[in-house]
Amino acid sequence: PDRVFSGVQPTGSLHLGNYLGALKKFAALQHEHECLFCIVDLHALTMPQEHGKLAGQTRHIAAAFLAAGVQPDKALVYAQSAIPAHTELAWYFNCVARMGWVQRMTQFKDKSGKNAEAASVGLFTYPALMAADILAYKATHVPVGDDQKQHLELARDIAAKFNHDFGEPAGEPNFFPLPEPLIDGPGARVMSLRDGTKKMSKSDPSDASRINLTDDPDTIAKKIRKAKTDTGSVPGSVEELAGRPEIANLVGIYSALSDTTDAEVLAQHAGSQFGPFKNALADVTVEAMRPVSDLMRRYLADPDELDRIMSRSADAARAISEPVMVDVRRIIGIHGSA
Ligand code: TYM
Image (cartoon, rainbow, N blue to C red):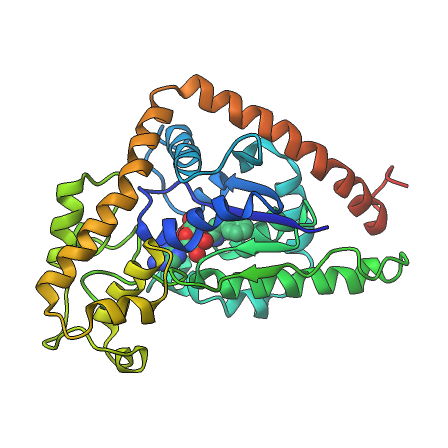
C-alpha cells in the first residue's frame, strides 16, 4: 500500500509553477492513494518572515490546496507545526545526515546567496526536516516540481543510512521506505515569463515573471501577451523547441493546463505568429485559473471552516505518525522506549 506526502511553504503567493508542478498533481493523486498535503510553516522560518503573517499565510495555502481540487474527505490538509513528529524526527535525521551531503544542496547555495555566514542554521538543515516530513508517515511517493529533486535524493540517502545504522542492528533493515519522487509530466518545471532559462519563482523581483494564483483575468492575459519570446514563430515539432526556452515554456504551460501534449499543441498552432498563439494561451490560462481563484476566495472567506478542516486533518496525521515515532525511538534505543 502506498502513501503520498507533499509540502508547500507558506511564503509569498503561489504561482503557476506551484500549481502545475504540485497542486494540480495533488488533486489527481487523491483518488487512488492515501494522501497527506502539508503546509510546511516551520520551513518558512528558515528565511526572515514578516512579523504576524505566518498563520494567515498558512491558511492561504490550505485554501489554495482545496481550490485546486484537493477534497478534505479524501486527503489530509494541515500545518506541519501541528504535528510534533516532524521536528523530533528532523533532529534524529540531523544526526544521520552528513555535512558533505547537505553542503551539496544547490537550493541552500541559491538562498543563502553571497553571504552564507549570515544564513540561518535552519536553512542549512532544511533538507533534514523535509526528509522527516515525508518519513514521519513512512510515505512512499512525493509529488514535487523538478527543483525539489535534489532534496528528495537526500531524503532517500537519509532513509537508507538510518536503516543501515539503526534498522539493521534492530533487525528491521527496511524500516523506512526510500521515497520515490513523482516529478514527471508537463508542468514539472515552469520557467519565468521574462527569462526562459530561470524557473518561475516566488522570489523573483519582477511580478511580470510569474502568474499568481490570485491574479485577475486581465492581469493574466497581459502577462502572457508580454511574455518574452524569440523572433521566430511557433514551430511544428517538439524537436524544434530545443534551444528555444521561451516558446518551449509557453507550449509546456499550454499543454499542462489543457491536459494534452506539447506535440498536440504544436500540431494545432504550427507556423502561427506569437501574437495569436499568446492570445490562445491567455484564454486557456484564464479559463483554467478562474475556478481556482474563485474557489480560493470562497474558502478564505470562511477561515473557521478552514481551521476545522486543518485541525481534523492534523488529528488524522498524528494518528499515522505517532506509531511510527514509537518504533523510531525503540530502534534508536531512546530511554524508556523499549
Ligand atoms: P516550495 O514551497 O518552494 O514549492 C512548492 C511546490 O511547487 C513546486 N514548484 C515548481 N514546479 C514547477 N515549476 C516551478 N517553477 C516551480 N516552483 C516551485 C516545488 O517543486 C514544490 O513541489 N522544500 C519544498 C517544500 C517541502 C516539501 C517537503 C515537499 C517541505 N517538505 C516534503 C515535498 C515533501 C519547497 O520549498 O517547495
